[in-house]
Image (tube, rainbow, N blue to C red; front, side, top):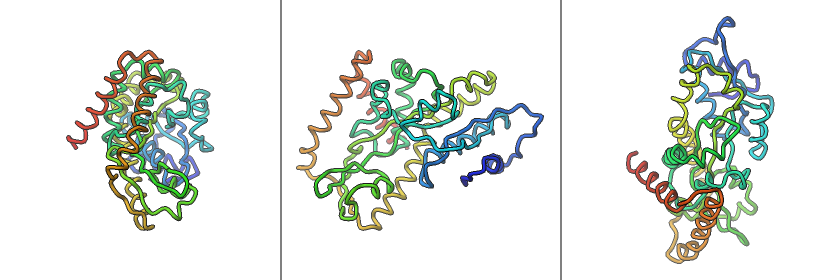
Length: 298
């Protein structure tokens, strides 16, 4: 889908892509304002646009989407959503570590190799964990999902976790970097939520709520994860073309990073316990098992 600044054209493009005409004025419609893309590589924005196409189709055109006037930064997303400045948005759980403690299970290292499979497993864990859902009050959660795993780049004086071409180009000294270490499951990740303003959700009919629930959850997590994987693949091609070599870790590198990985897990377990989770280690094991099963099924 092509992103255009003019919101009226965005609606026409969206409905044309589905083979539907723009709904007539006499038909009762609800328009979701969605967060505009940060740039042309914004895969989550593309995912929201495709989901909007599905929402329009699932509700026979009663739900439309239009771009908000300005892009909302990740750190401001929850506040903008709850204030009604935007209806539909994706944002990272890292934006509020005190609020999202259990939900940051998806930020841990050594999870899955693909955003799609990890996102599906993440969504299923979310659905079975009431305490995780409790961290997402005051807005309607359509899905939770993750980015693809991060690679480890060694700079002259520092180490960097990088997963996209944008992050690579923004990293100090990236011109001199020539090697990326690929740990199975990644050295870090980032969990996200795809959310709708609660008041907007409350105003929908029971019929439209049911329709959106059918295309939310696992289906939305799979969609967003797949688009993020596609964007990462293009980024990897670009980095390889720039001369970056992707390598598996040596035994020494595995040993060196194992302590850091264990520290990250222990820190999350402590945070999850503080949020009321009685057996966070068991939840993490179930999450990793779900990722493995999903990857085997693909």
